[in-house]
Image (cartoon, rainbow, N blue to C red):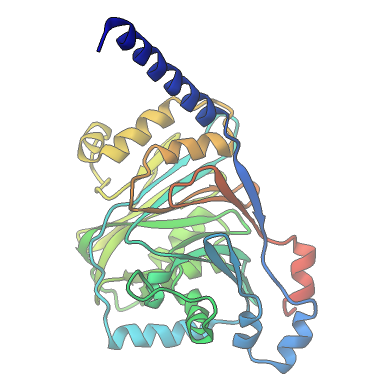
Length: 363
């Protein structure tokens, strides 16, 4: 290659790179509003139809995920699911890791970020309006219902959609109308010391109880402390939890048979490494995603927006395992959701206003 051609090729490469960066940096986010589906005369419909039938009518497909709106009382479902678990344990496999953070900047508005990293799965977003409890938005991966690459979910199948009616018992994270956020990450097998004075509570059922009844992060922690939490077998726990509201965050981590609460100033980061009694420097060494998030949160502007928080959680997203990323804003009860690392198509999830809720929930 002659010298002029070398120079021309170099200039062309630079121009292509500049053009790519210009397009990338100026590309706008497509923000899609998503709210629950409800029947115009839900109370009348519920009076003459089964609760499952009412929920079934609210199914919708939005982009690359699905939604259902749950109303009424699903405590019997939780009780039935609890008994099924005790009779037939499902052992969780250790898969790829997740990343979460809760940050409280000087502006006073909190942001909770979350990457769900796992096997390929579709997502169900549930809008929950229990007869006795707080409204909430919650996520359930479809592999919890037996769907996956080898057995894909078909939205045209009535039998497949009926499986999703078990979602109240298979919630892994969400936020309620009080701005209480709960999410979890795999940590490793820990034994839990049983307490005769406390009831056993399956981890995902605890998540549902927190969303239905916790008015604050502290209240959520108290609900967890009131029971013996298990997930991977009787008296076994394999996850730690991040719980947050508009003013504080807490990490629940189990060791030596009991639950521990971790509080930190400014922000908290949770991945798949232990936090209890581990120094910040060692945490960064133990987990690259922790180090990345720690660095970015230290640089966060004093008055950030959800878009800033989304860029931070994006830095810890990984191909091909990040199935979704979410930013929870407790102050406004907003959730911003990105699927499979597409950070230019964002779904804005919102609950209905209380006036509308009152029209279609049983008083």
